[in-house]
Image (spheres, rainbow over the protein chains, first blue to last red):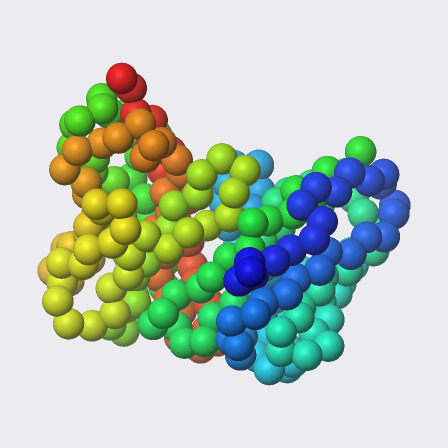
Length: 112
Length: 113
């Protein structure tokens, strides 16, 4: 069983469309995150949720909306996609900071 | 605020040579420090971490790192590089509240036969 799984792995879509990325973790962790990795491989946090409560919303355009139906799931919905949204989006989870994060395998989003 | 600087965006070594990837951090409190590895088209995998205690930490695949408070460094080393070590390596520091990992810009390791 994959610890942190994301779907889809690849997503190609046109500008202006709305898309969602799903994330699930089976580790029993309380906190989940979304990170964006740009074309230069730079990783930046977007959101975090702790037990379904939004903790971090890091200056992300409000076209991006996370949703956590339960502590095992954190989905990312993106409205009106723009070319600049093209990136790899990683979901992660953790129980305690000292243990580090467990990352999913990423979703490569390409907006054309 | 916490931050991480990785010196050298690209490092090339021969197979069997020493690997040294540099990481310096800035933190106003005792840091938690991490090294992650990313293989092509994959997610990030935790290599090793420093929280408290022994300053020399050992990780997976023969990697180790030493926390040096006086130098604010957490360099990653491996005595003998293997072709399979070719990947992107990220150093990260924990920010405490709110809890998040802050990553360096990454170092791409190439290993030549």
